[in-house]
Length: 160
Image (cartoon, rainbow, N blue to C red; front, top):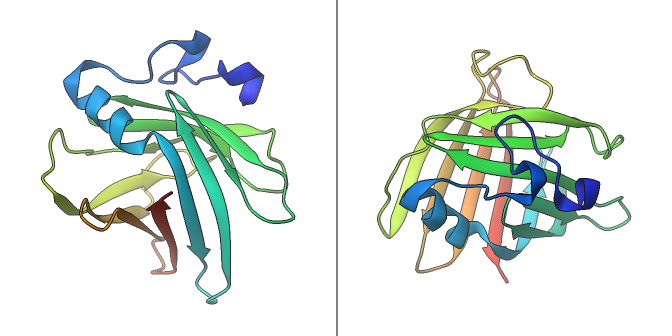
C-alpha cells in the first residue's frame, strides 16, 4: 500500500485512521471491503481483467503484466474521496479524485448517476459522471465512467 497503507488526502484515511464516519460510512466500508474481480472495458472495446483488494481506507488493483496500482479512499458525508494514480504509467503519483452526491441509504439494488472528478482533474464540473448499478443478489457492481463527450469506460466488479 502507499506509504505502508497510511497515505491519504485531506479526506483520506491518513495515519491509518478510519476511512468512514457514522453508520452510513461503516455500512459502505463493509460493502466494499474484500477482493473483487474487475473487468475494465474501454470505448474501443478493449478488455482487461484484474483483481482489486479493498481494505479500510486503502485499495489496490492488479492487472496482468502491469505494476499494481494503490490508493486511498474515504467516505465523508455524501463524498467519496480517493487518491489514485492519474495514469497507470506513473502508479506512484497519486492525485485527488472524488464522487459526489453519494446517497446515505440504498436498498437491495441501486441505479444512480453521480458527478465524478477523475484523478488530476481540477473539479467535477466538466461533465464527467459515474453511472453505478448494483444488485446485492448477483454481487455485481457496474460502474460506467462517462466523459462529457459521451465516451464510456465500463468497470464490472464481481465479489470473489
